[in-house]
Amino acid sequence: MDRIEDNVKRLLNGDALKESQEFCDFTLEAQNEATVAKGVAPAAPSDYIPQLNKNVCYIVAAVLINDSGEVLMMQEAKRSCAGQWYLPAGHIEAGETIQQAVEREVLEETGLTMQSTTLIMVQSAEGCWVRFVFTGNAAGRLKTPAEADSESLQAKWISDINELSLRASDVEPLVACGRQYWRAIKEKQQWHPEILPVARHHTKLLLRLLICVRKKDTNRVHILLSEKTEAHIPTCEINPRRSLHSTLKKYMTEIFGAELPQHRPHGVLSVEHSPTRNVEVEGDGFCLTLLISIRQPLEEVGLIDKYTWLEVNPNLEELILPRMAKNMTTILHVIR
Image (cartoon, rainbow, N blue to C red; front, side, top):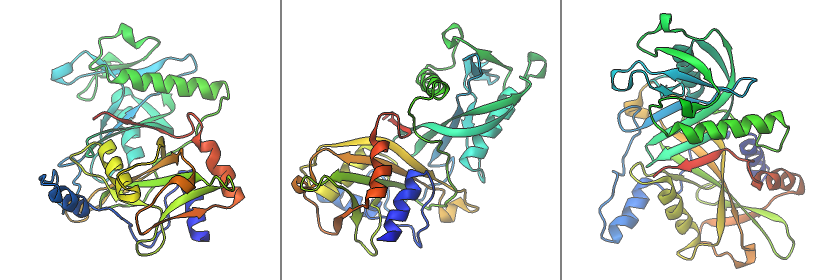
């Protein structure tokens, strides 16, 4: 099981897995079959292919804070919200990585060059709208009103965003998260390591689960494995018409049965995405890895066939346990 433990280490480091294939244990087709068996029409077709800016929407946003604790804001130029303020943000364009998109948006809307350091939040609405929220460092000269264009009217460092006329209040929790991270790093508090999206192409929208539990008899940590085809970390397809919470619950039920054990989703460990050249054929998907801990002892947790527990070695256990603490994973915020 050296390959499995090496993959777990990679996920804890925010890296992409080096697998020979794209595993998916609970596909949309299987989910739809279960839905139809209950007399309910499927919400999404079984052959769904994610197509960027057609049936999936990936958004980026930047929460950049300077040494004085001020946040970078831009003034909108779009006719529908001209003059109002917002974080630098926008759609990922075809052929872009997630990181390239956020750094481009910051440059276009504020005039500053951004160096991304980490994701601080991933937001999801249904399974097909995802916003990746970054922080990092910025350098250069702010865009002035004399340089206004179709991207923005100007940019400023702001100490209190409540003094602005905001385009939408949804930036407030993002700014709060960014400030919390900024203070934690400044005061050297415990926080998750820097996590940036890593390049691996996926044809589907995938959710990978690193599920951990302790065995009461030995107090040792075990992780869940799927034994479908070769052993691997369990992965399911995200339903693009249902919330991520819905997908997670259905998959957990597929693994553990109707009586789910008490569990806690901690947050995101890694994001894998690489743009495709032909989205209509290949699909422009991604994979989120979510860390989950089971609160009950292993001896009390039942499993459906084709899943099993693997006891990890003590060195790997020492890497896993700290990540279950508060703020040690990237926030996953499911809007709806």
